[in-house]
Amino acid sequence: MKKKKAVLFFVVLGIIFSTILVLSWFNPSMITGSFKAGDRLLVIAITIALLIYYFSIEETPQLMPSILATDKETAREKDKSNVTFRDVAGLEEIKEELQETIDFINNSYKYKRMGAKIPKGILFYGPPGTGKTLLAKAVAGETNATFLYASGSEFVEKYVGVGAKRVRTLFEKAKKEAPSIIFIDEIDAIGSKRNSESNNEKDQTLNQLLVELDGFNTNETVIAIAATNRLDLLDEALLRPGRFDRHIYVGNPNVRAREKILEVHTNNKPLDKTVDIESIAKKTTGLSGAQLANIANEAAIIAVRNNKTIITIDEFDAAIERVLAGLEVKNPSVLAKEKNIIAFHEAGHALVSKVLNVDLIQKISIIPRGQALGYVLKFPDEERYLLTEKELYFKITGLLAGRAAEEYKFKEITTGAKDDLNKATEIAREMVCSYGMSSLGTLALDELYIRYNYDSIRLEIKKITDRAYNDALTIIEENNEILEQIANLLIKKEILDSDELDIIYKKYKKRLHYAT
Ligand code: ATP
Image 1 (spheres, rainbow, N blue to C red):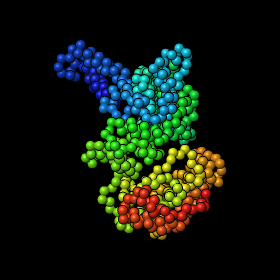
Image 2 (image 1 turned 30 degrees about the horizontal axis):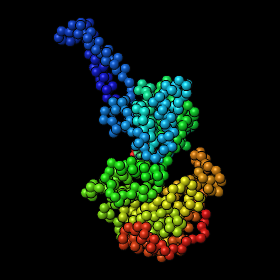
Image 3 (image 1 turned 120 degrees about the vertical axis):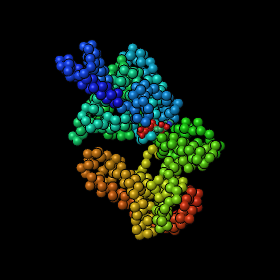
Image 4 (image 1 turned 30 degrees about the vertical axis):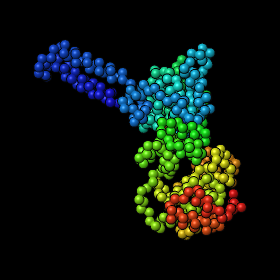
């Protein structure tokens, strides 16, 4: 805190100066010049005043990421949100659910008169970028309440007591600025389950948060909203009634919500007639609101880069690829031999995904993007909320097909399958640990069990991935002509779209039996 340090500097200077003056009272030869008693008293009085001021300055927690605030303190203290529900597309049922909270803030006297207790804490949970922060800001915007933003990681400190003090100060501020909304993003950073290994500082911070949540009463219109990607990690005490007891899941948008989100993010942009928001929404299954907002913005940037005055569907297609696969590498220095391997690797993915009917392949490319040397652009062909064991297994098989194609064609494997292996292992891990889809039994395994039985779990994961890999190899062997055709055309053209692939696929052999 700069202000506090500056005052401290003057206080120290004042104390030194006053000491000299007091000493010179008794021994006037210490300083030259004529200091009257009045001057001496004035210096001492100023020092005491500065001292009192120093102790009265509050320690203010870091409530806003510094990039959001030029003058941090003023921006933090007087933050009013200008986001409203109109800026939040889709999520209709959540907005409806939040109406009651909004009504409480706007008309708190109605509830207080009835002796009704309002929800103190709301917890949004769900995958990243789905609009949790946006919703919290919109609640503040709809009510004109002060919006106090804090990220859980800002309370994580090395020194015992510092995090707890920050929590205290945050709630004090919220009460002072009431009606107010405290939003704690990434609450898992301070609110994760306590155990014998957790440290004293973290526990103190969490305890302080629990105390504060219990502490504010119905006279103060303060609502605490928190967000996390991992509800399962949070301490039970935090989720108890009276604390964060309203849990609202904010998931990835469905096709209608995607359309609305794209509309919100394109309504200030000049769009060409070729741009059909509905069809963009259809081919972006599984993407979050943040990714869709990013696509709309990227499309506008690409249009500017291409010296266009209007955004066409080409810019949107380029933006989707940019957001999903990363930046295209210009003049890549990939060796011809490597290009061959990449082409067969990607052809393996495309072929096996087609045979097993996993996702809808829109495009395959061997032009490097981001860290990927080649990629298959695919989306699930429809909204899916439930996946069968077989479908999960097929996803793993499709992911491992790149490596299987390398082994089949070159009798050698490369580092190119790193990302595929991570994703395949993660799905297999979920099958074993969360969905009860292994010989360990129909049960979900908690973190502690996983830690102490990792060997048997690893064996189960390996059984699934090994079987899937062998299946991918068999499919490739059975359809080797198609693999060759896709790979060779890919080497020639570098990019193949779904129509070009469909022409080749006509003769593929669909497998009738799978190892699941
Ligand atoms: P994280 O869990 O990573 O903190 P989040 O769920 O809090 O993410 P937000 O920060 O709220 O996500 O969303 C990021 C951006 O995505 C928003 O600023 C907005 O531009 C866009 N966005 C997400 N969901 C929506 C939506 N439903 N309507 C409009 N825009 C959205």
